[in-house]
Image 1 (cartoon, helix red, strand yellow):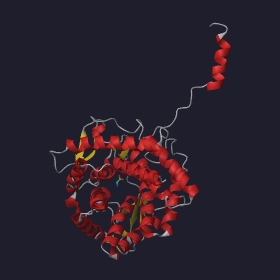
Image 2 (cartoon, helix red, strand yellow; image 1 turned 90 degrees about the horizontal axis):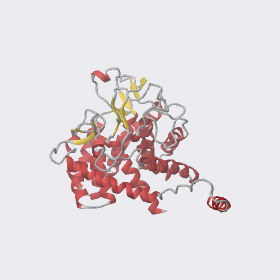
Image 3 (cartoon, protein in one colour; image 1 turned 45 degrees about the vertical axis):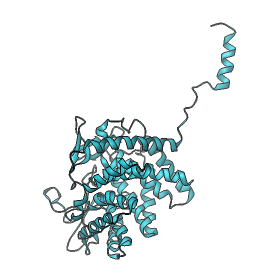
Image 4 (cartoon, helix red, strand yellow; image 1 turned 90 degrees about the vertical axis):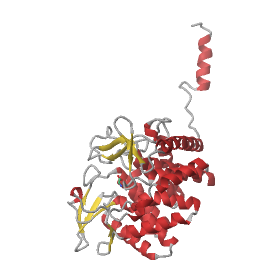
Length: 403
Ligand code: GLY
């Protein structure tokens, strides 16, 4: 090298820094808008791909990457219609609305479901969003019927809605109640107000109170399954079905709990639910096994961490709940929750989790876990991961717009 050039290069290095310039992050608003645009394109492809199968809904993909669909009675049926409604809310085009209506109607027969608790998921994610965005009273009536179906599963001696009926795989439990069931209470609280009838909210609050008493450990982590004795109403067993072990913290279960109590605080204003949600949030966000990108392993106690599978569905669900909870707590805590939620949104919106256009069976997110102990739906896209991701994007977008 020419001798005179060396001092010149040294000066340049000092002025501009010796290392490569720091990579600037995209503004969050831009990440959100790009992600919603992508989600819209991808979901329109998904919608069109099932146009000739009018009774099928997206579920996941198989080992060859081929779309796996379900009928309306599978618990996830309401999520894809819900995705379309959220996307329509963000970009109100005719095609999104037409598909959202089309897919919502595919789930309509589930309003009469009384043999499992999932009627809340199925009807409120689809018809609930349909009514919220259109005000069409026909949708409201479907939610009314579905709420009446769900409350048939309430046992006043126990104080909870039964999750699963008797089957060979559930025979070990007299009266199983899973933490996921908290999510179905949103429809009941909504119906109570919409139809001016406290029967729904009494049942929802009894369920939430009983669950708060029995489902949680001292550190605010949740069991998955609590089974009750049908004669005494007392706890019979504390187990898991989808987690690593009875005593572990199944990631999506912690998400259902966080979302459930945050939503119950919104619906009732009861501070006990807010404190519960804050306790659960603390467990999740301070957990030593929560990875840097804030997308949890499928179970916080999975045996092979850091090589355990991640669960993007849990990440999206927790993210959406944290954004809502951030609105109910003092500024310092709010900032803490939003920082985690922002990291989660950025992670999920990166190529590490978000699919390419037309890939991934036309689902938006990759890398979720449905049922690890069964070995089913492991490291795959799932319609509920997409639903809570799009909901989280929408919630964060609204928050940024109000700032
Ligand atoms: N509600 C079932 C699940 O979370 O997998």
